[in-house]
Length: 294
Image 1 (tube, one colour):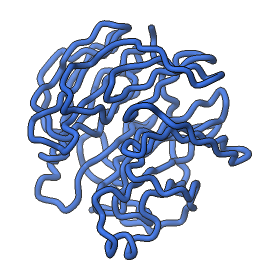
Image 2 (tube, helix red, strand yellow):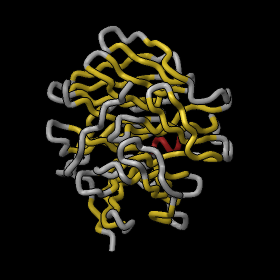
Image 3 (tube, one colour):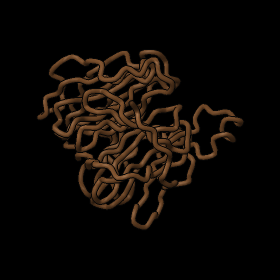
């Protein structure tokens, strides 16, 4: 049985993103980052002071990973770039692919320091996207013919990877080499949500191996046990909940992004918090994101 919980959190940031995605947290600076992909913005929020900065981007960014105190890696529709924290300058780092009809989407750093990053069609063309493994500048295509790649996250020991094609809505689990983040077996179905309303979107895996997944279209974050059983649903006040991230000095809080993309005027009026960023308001056993190793 799935336990249902009403929203007891707060609006962490009231700026309504067209497509809020890719949240992450840097514990060294107590700063949360997320993207408005279609708005070409990088949002930066210092949690202790709630000081907010919005950075314009020259591309559609979707994933940010910390490299060190002075550098970040950004995944975008134009490739991978190193961003200077001091002044925001961007330097090309690597290309995922050369398909002009695609943009980047979900991604996350494996405990080894390698990155999984994904692409999809700009209008979600069927089977246009893929999921890649990025180790330094070495790019390896892991899974092809993906329509809407999402849900990328890893078990605490790095031995299991998770991902989903939201167009299929079956969360997949794949065994990995913990030292590299590369698959050592074939993906198997972890949780079949294909007959359920909503789409499996962004995910994070906590210290106990629980998967926290934002369910697009259902105004919710769902929780799955390591055996694939859905055990809880937490409501959020925006229908298109998109991706969670662990935040706070102990990684014991959960941030959730959302979006108003593809909503008409009537839908937006009915969903006034669409695109805002929330804190779920519960204690979690989160983990800090690994740094990207170059």
